[in-house]
Figure 1 (cartoon, rainbow, N blue to C red):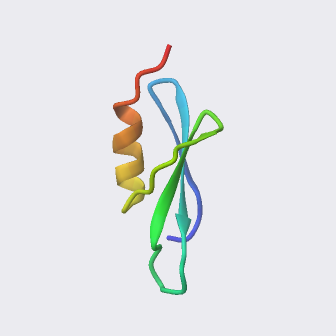
Figure 2: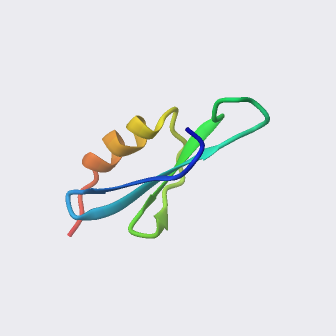
Figure 3: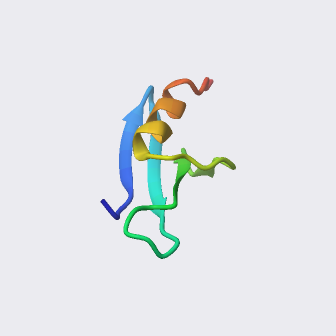
Length: 58
């Protein structure tokens, strides 16, 4: 998989984007929640969405 994955989780718009560093698989995944870039990297898209499920929002 080499494209952005988007989901709605708990009313939040969450996207997971792979970042490649020359290999066939992503080096890591970036997370954006409601257009805010999360300053953390993730090992997989599933990790991004698991993180987003635990985010508290108002």
